[in-house]
Image 1 (spheres, one colour):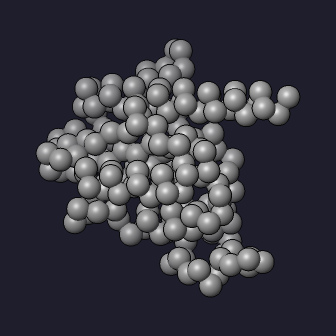
Image 2: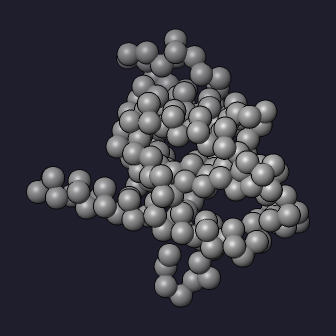
Length: 171
């Protein structure tokens, strides 16, 4: 976390979820060799490729990953933006399990995509309801905020290590 901040995780990572609803349903026919992907897909791929790390934050619905998030990952499977990219998954649920099913599914998908899942940065947040301010829709629970800060610190460290290793290889 940056010195002189109040260590809120949302001050250190940019959200890209606004792009997800614009993605068309995955269709391998639109994604083959020599195909030009839809504009929203190209924008997602560009954003992921430009990032130092990938953080997926998701609720759990019916013991699984919401379709909109899985659809985004499907568009990234064959294009390579996630290869060796440090990634973390944070799930939340109103139940005591903290979204463990969705967390496991997302981690497995990211591993299959050869993303570097940073286990120390992954979290399952149980009983999320009382931990969020309903007006701002932000986490207000101090213990949860501290834990998220630790998770983001771990992800940032992995991203820095990966960037340093890549820079050394290029010399």
